[in-house]
Image 1 (cartoon, rainbow, N blue to C red):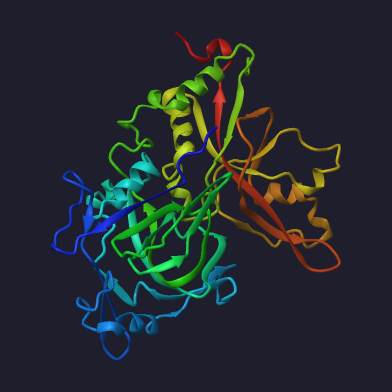
Image 2: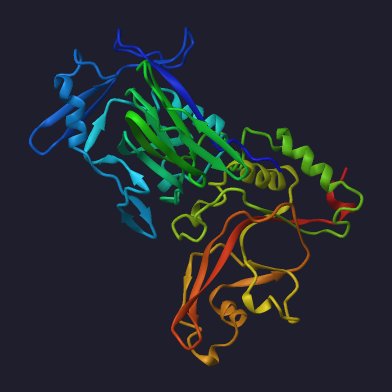
Length: 426
């Protein structure tokens, strides 16, 4: 199965001669107005306009230096903590509560592009039943930070973001026009990699890049000048015609994967007696987060959403979305291994248990049977291999020293496949 687009980007020309920008590019390339940043340095309000120009900045030539002076060293998250380590990330930042900007990614058409390219058809349950204009956008961008990476050696080493909330799916990086060299952004997903060059010497445009939160990405060293970016968290929002709707306007019969799956299922030797078909989700979801669970399957994206829709809407099969437990250690060299996959009876949040600390608590399989409800599914025919996992359960481990035992699960799409003779009735 091929991967969907995991990243996209583009360029917006700055129109300094008129206040209104051309939003849709119907009469020429889309343009935006110069970007204004306002912040409070504790003594007074400050203002700077990009592109940097002494004639348009009231602060004169020192405007940029005052912006940098108003920033704080940038940290990064590690195991739930904010870490300051300039050998890993060297940059300064303003949090979204410390500044405001005139730049609007929705008005600039960026969110429309992201929705169409990256999350076309992604849908989820409306928050609190809300049905306002935002529910039709498909993507909502939340301003997160302003970051400045300065030469020499401003950088952010390779890392992967953690999902920040129930509907969070990616990040948007907007590079403001500030002369610099270096600072390329590398984005990788599975076996694919893209390199975006943000170098902007002529100050004529704004560049932007969006990518999924499970992508590995790296900000390479800035060797000259300053790279200034606005970062946004991207959230999926219910949109009209989303493919997870009961009555979608996107037909599952028109996906390229539809005929591929149908041909497989019509094969004369494929699952002749029927059984269970499985597909491990290609993208990572916070499926052990109690707040995220209610968003599934509506928050599925890319191939995950398409395959779920085809199996359910296109073929009419009974379809489940379930965590699959990784093999228990006690089974690795045991003849008593239960034949089949350990699949949860439902999607449930991370389980934390005090069991396992006593000799009488039993084997791992017995403990897990009590704290993480699951069943053994024999003969699952998997279409792919698992590519990611999350902690599903943690319990005490019996031994000479106190320790914890961690168990991991991967989210998968499972379908009940009828016998070949009943699979596609005429």
